[in-house]
Image (cartoon, each protein chain N blue to C red):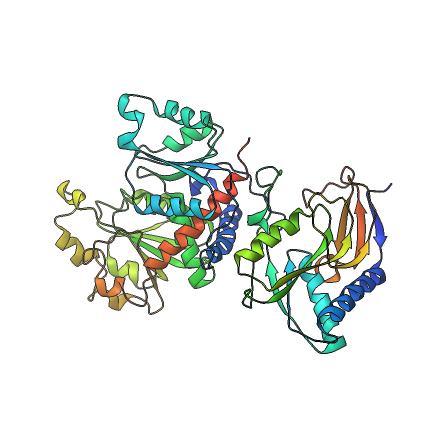
Length: 311
Length: 188
């Protein structure tokens, strides 16, 4: 580990990373987690650096987590959101990014509804770019915090059976988790209604199933995705009640769960749809620890990429 | 000059550690003995601190607690170096407030590592006092910092690197002068 060198100025997708790089982020995050447990929750690692949080698509939790991570690293912060940005006036995305660059910003944390938007920016400007979610494509820091939480609880990802349940089709969380999990040696199952869990994922080595019991019985980790009500209107499933009955983790289905299985959720939870309150707040749930770990992981990633941005 | 030249051998390293331990004993463990803790700065300050503690214990029976400190998050050259430092675990098994602590590192040179360490330590609390113990003072200071306990002074020119090796970490006790132009294994 002592000979490892982080060399990337951007974090765009876990698909791009080697297992060793992912492990290095998680190792680094362990130390940043301790910073938040001290009385003085701040280190000067990014002192003098400017970070721009550029959220073209709305976000509360991810943005809050990034912003707090930046503050704890002593960075200077600017927030730009879609409504107030000149994108509304017809400026191209790249022009906006070049303006940010011209202000000598060092890092851009960006969320956008178009997959690949961050990659486009990253290729064309000097600043480091962190993907905070691009459409249904990727959300690497969410995946990293999931991996961190699993590794912290289970010791290692190797050989673990991880089931991700819900709206896989529209989920950047599932698309990010899967690469990290596979690279670190876990076995991944995607489960949910056939309309929301495409068979094509079998091509990358994921087990696809459309039956909740099969997804739960041998799982070491169960990650439940939020069911978005607007999907129901588009006919992906008949009703949220029916979804809850067949794919929700609840009193009826929890009997299939291994006693030491972790229950995860990227939030926000639809209580009693994909996950019953009793389980969400129960002993197997690590949902709030995911939030805590997200901060540590984001601090680690900001620290690492900031060291690779050219002056 | 060869790429790597021995400056001190194993027994000279041992003698230097003994000098540091003796100086600590005379300040803390002689006439009016009082408690203190030690803080090893990663990486080579850690085996160095362990050696001092072993020596203190065998001479006096007193075994100070040991904290491990990584100062990567406090460096003043992040983004200026070719590569980022690897962050090692910081573990502090005692309350920093009102504790007398002795910082330990292998080589004191520019003083920048110690500047960072002072910032890190004070973020963990308000120690009663902080002392500094080093195996080697090689001069070339850039900050107004000095050590309280020095194992030995070594004169080497600015462009040379001094590397301390301990049995525990990389093989054989010794201090080596390294010509980096000839001896490239990446950044250390």
